[in-house]
Image: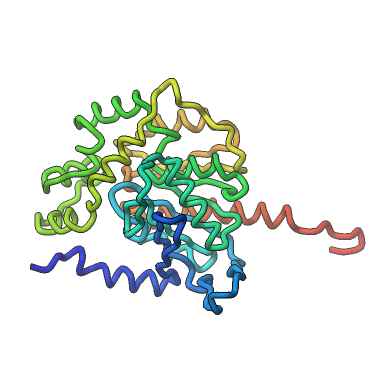
Length: 323
């Protein structure tokens, strides 16, 4: 029987290519490779002996996915909305979308290190990173490690780090015994439970579609379980980095049940004056999928304000006799 989710993939890939992004595999180091969806004009078509990096004239935006799906599935409603004005890069984190490693390291730091190396190999020198959920924690780590690469952050439904206390409180409040039980469902019932806490509005799909999604989207279960184990840090080891980025924008679904509004508001205070917060009503953890138009408006407004500020800084002062 045809897997309906898999059958839709060629259409999604076609839409991504129409939007101007194409898949490209980058060898990070021997044994580790990452798949990126990149602007098609940046792929170097010159002979292999040429070491010239492709030039990028548009501001770069990197979209980092969460734990339940790969990059283009997570950001399917944002990519086409951004590509006219921005060079959009969509990585698949390790053990998602064909990105693999033989390293035993499962920490967000290792994900961020590989992402940094991949972006630099693709010729990205500066970017704004948008991170969702698990991808938000990787984005925070990337910003901490590579302030020259990451100019600004947009974070949705995520936190600085998954501490013992936050993990325990969140799972208890949702009625799950472990992160794997929540994020790596093995049955239609488990997937429905995940969707019920991730979305604000109750979603209905036939059981066949749930089964097909489970089969396609939850591969590499052993490694992803290890990623979840590597995510949690002790409360005593948790610190608030001194981020060098000019701005950190928290863009939230106001009805997020996984990382509630209170966590976002507390994080804004911890991050200080450079942090701003914006809530989207009638949206949960999956805010970018539930209310994509509202999310895209907020995101593009933030990106436009960044770009305007950069242009103002780089504009030469007019001479006294000039307008």
